[in-house]
Length: 156
Image 1 (cartoon, rainbow, N blue to C red):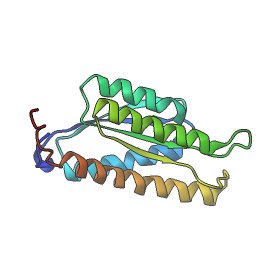
Image 2: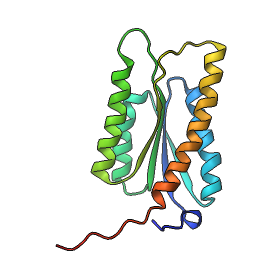
Image 3: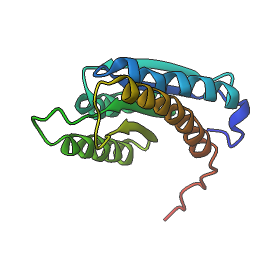
């Protein structure tokens, strides 16, 4: 990847969990609006998964194709009162970290785990707005990471 990100054409995979899709999709909208400012020639392919738990495996498989410069995952993991949602969120973030270390393709998480989420108008509006902002922040992070100049390995 060139260090001049603005003139590059990175290919990005954006994975969206479908639980609370109306909220999660705002991360994609915020991401696209911001990444187009940074790298107008970039392209983003969208993949949908049922929930957050399925995202790390897909991210790893996409990274192994060699087609993507970066992968972004968006999900909203809420306490449904049946299981500890923080375990799911931890598994997702740990899975993405493991996948990016193994494949060397940077991965970014817009996977949020609110302490309290209720399907009320106020909460839905708050998280909808928050995901839009977090999507834009993910685009900034992609820009910053892909613009890094990484020295070649030293021969042994």
